[in-house]
Image (cartoon, rainbow over all chains, first blue to last red; front, side, top):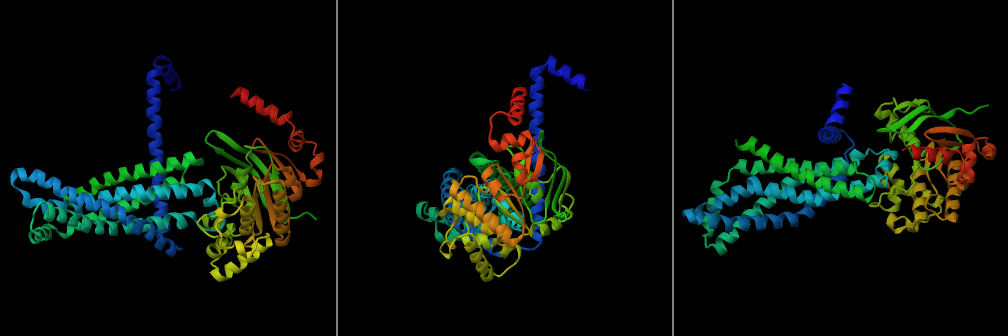
Amino acid sequence: MNTALQIFREKIPFLHDICQAIGHSILNVIQALGAISLFVLQTLRHCATPPIFIKHILRQFIDIGYYSLPVVGMTALFTGMVLALQSYTGFSRFNAESAIASVVALSITRELSPVLAGLMVAGRVGAAIAAEVGTMRVTEQIDALSTLSVNPMKYLVVPRVIAGTIMLPVLVLIGDIIGVYGGYIVSTHVLGFSSGSYLYQTWQVLENIDVVSGLVKAAVFGFFVTLMGCYHGYNSGRGAQGVGMATTNAVVTASILILIFNYILTQVFFS
Amino acid sequence: MTKRNKIEMTGVYKAFGTKKVLQGVDLNVPVGSSMVIIGGSGTGKSVTLKCVLGLLQADKGSIKVDGMDMIKASTRAREEMMKKFGMLFQGGALFDSLPVWYNVAFGLIHGKDMDKKDARKIATEKLEQVGMGEAIANLYPAELSGGMQKRVALARAIATNPEIIFFDEPTTGLDPIMADVINELIVKCVKDLGATAMTITHDMASARKIADHVAMLHEGKIVWTGPIDDLDNSGSPYVDQFIHGRADGPITDLQSELLKSA
């Protein structure tokens, strides 16, 4: 076996190096997936067992939910407004302007509000969690928690994950209302639609599943955003570079997971 | 009569990937004594301390604290044992989002479920023990100087009246006068509590002040251990080179060989 490998390395060194690099990458990905899975299991176990730091969860409700409200609200408002404008441009070619209310309501509640809120919260909250927990790792504050008989997973990770999972659906629900209102403003004030018929159409087209699916997506996205922030911060490398890398990785992985799980959940709800 | 050992390390190994840090550490710390581990940077002092604390899992060997093997013990048993420990971190490791008094009272409130009012009272007493008044109790760690942060960290380490206190480079980053103040405080606090202490340092003035016993760690092994009074006549070339801070000797010879072979 060794001889075959040696011959391969000597005869075709270029191909050997490529294979080695690919192998390393695959092993690294598998290792990371294993570490993240263990972290998820540990987090779920700690969520279900006392002690639970209630005050910390409430504080995270404020940090994650209340302080994200402006950015999520603005995103939803302008997305709803742009959606109405663009839909009008497209639908007017086929004399289908009346479908604007339906398109705005369904797009916002099913897809745009949960995905955009998830991405915005990943940028704002996921990065902040990774930086804060990462700094605590680097300055040995996480080790200090252990020596003071406090489990760092329970104290740092559980409150953030619970708050993220609960607060993102609340943000998305508010985003749904603001987004639909954005479409309503443009349609009635710019495009000349009747206020009553716009609201009637919106009300007619929306079903419970449209809103519920968006809220379920939001809960899953909230879980992943906070979990990735905590995971990357908790396993942050040393120094400023380590914390910077943890922050970047937290936002990137959370964003990718949001897009992947958005597809999976859409398939589950609407296929 | 020989004292019973509070900490017993036997054949402890720890590696990070291919890098072997501890290569068979054997060390005993008698009850109520102060053991100082000296050694150069990168010799495995911090790893040794973290293995005893359970912050790192040793690969092989046995670490017994009060007779309980910390490597084989369950997580719950280890968490219970942690309640006997106090730790002063090199950088203080104070929680920067909490005021000074809460930092000191943290182990009492969360570790021992004490009422906040009672915990604050004890925190104030401990702060007074390390020469800090009530006035700083409501400040945040970032508002304190390095020396003051170290005092607060010391107050936090002794707040739960631990049986064993660990000190990680307690005088690093402090001016000589403040370093001596911290050394005096460490000696006083350990004596007052009747605790067993384990310190790692490369500050010889600190080691001479704090230690009852000294152990020299080199290349992941204890190369000499003995009472502080024997330190100057240890007969170990490693100890001699280290305590006199000489550039020539077996430590640097070995380092040069390793660098050449790398």
